[in-house]
Image: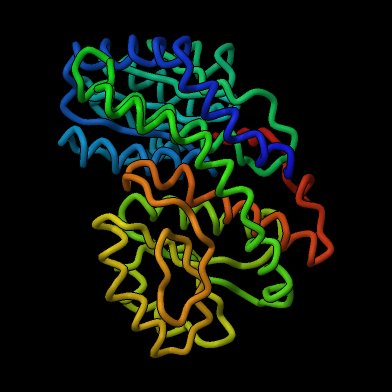
Length: 343
């Protein structure tokens, strides 16, 4: 897991190379030509959180309604929704889950434009879709996904911005900003804070993660990583949902990991953090700015769209360090396999 985490800056650089940006631009141009009226994502596990990020990008940057499909509606209940005006995107590291493949097959039969975003371009999912994006993350050693998750995020970002441009290409200023990501990721991974925090939560009984907007998928992915590797019950809430009831369970014995960026989503957390302070919660903030009363895992300040590519890195490292501190093996979580086949 440590090796996979460390490879992410190189993974960003690889996906930002001319070879891969060109391939993504061609797919984005093909999607723009079809002019879908809405976008449906289908995914499981970690990829579900990448898909949620894609849905935020789609609605905010493209102005198109977007949502996540319920695969069981197709595979368990036999539903055949009319997706003739939709772009249906399957997001999967392995591309091997039968339910996702069935969703894309059914969507394509109804007239949808289908796209597979996967680390295995020869997978059943990729073979079923009309279009495909190879996230080019390379072999992932650990069961808990890390570098494939961030590669999915970057691929979806390049796709959506390419569709927005119309011809698949990116403006020069956008390309220049993205080219800084590998160096910023290296800097983020060099911070010792996550490893230093792990002993503090070695005996925690439960934990809450939270964020709003683009940061919400990060909060959900962080919770999953902690549950997978440390078997620590971790509940993820948007900052808004946290105020609608779950706030009541926070106290000094329930640590809160809050992802607080510098954009609108981060600023909206300004009403959440004081309420956590009133509860005397133990708060750790992931962000570019100090927050009074909270410990911080620092990340560089970037455009809010890019922040999920950096914010998750210290949280992955915290999950790794905490698992080791608790005497667990983060490379082989009990009861889990790299590919989970569901129907």
